[in-house]
Amino acid sequence: MQLQDKVAIITGASSGIGRTAAKLFSKQGASVVLNARREKELSQLKSEIEAQGGKAEIVVGDVQLESTHQQCVETAIEHFGKLDVCFNNAGWLGEMNSVEDVSVEGFNETIAVNLTSAFLAMKHQIPALKNNGGSIIYTTSFVGPTMGMPGMAAYAAAKAGLNGLVHVGAIEGGEYNIRVNAIASGGVDTPMGRTVADTPENKAFVEGLHALKRIAQPEEIAETALFLASGQSSFITGAILPVDGGLTKTKV
Image 1 (cartoon, rainbow, N blue to C red):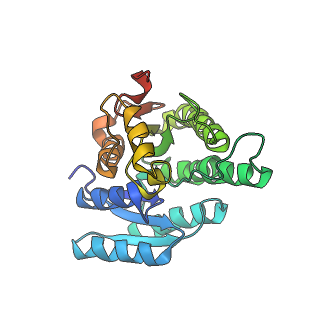
Image 2 (image 1 turned 30 degrees about the horizontal axis):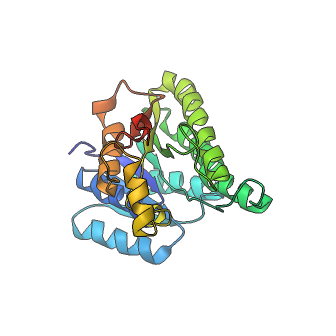
Image 3 (image 1 turned 90 degrees about the vertical axis):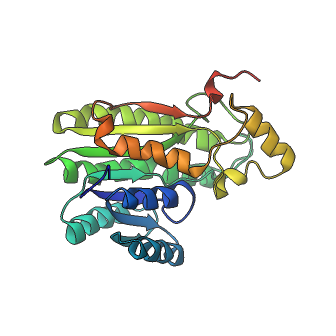
């Protein structure tokens, strides 16, 4: 029970890594505030967690909106009395096109979902964590900070920017015992990941980028988030932790 009596916000909780992390955090003792845009999926997840004896509340909203992050923090405090952990996992690939062809609207929306939302989350989470400290965790990527992929200019720019935000958050939060870290994942078998690995040939290519010659399961990323949320990582902050099956060490 690594998160016994803790309260956690999880964004992007309706599927993939976020959904898996929500169930894992609950199993480990946390009360969870679940955020995504899809109410049906969030309600189903809430029911599953409660059926297993856990506690959950949902906030339906777009992470591009500051009000969504305000509501998540307010829900945590109103229903569970405090906030300890924030797993800001929501993100998307956005418009995939060459730099010369990607639209300004598509670029800006991808930045808003992946980077501006990260800033808005931190802006409202840090004040709520100042009294007792806590852990803020982001999901970043190898795309952007480590390497480029064709057609992913906006996503790469957002994730590179996110890493910079994590570094600043760690410095500003440190005096309050607020730790800020990010998980730099490789390929993961999620609905978003499958849009890239959408054919047997593309899947084989993505798998081949990794030293382990496979892509991750959502549980493997969620377990890392649990580690960063728990006291086991009490002296880790400002880290961009690669959980990528050796992708960044592989030359194809």
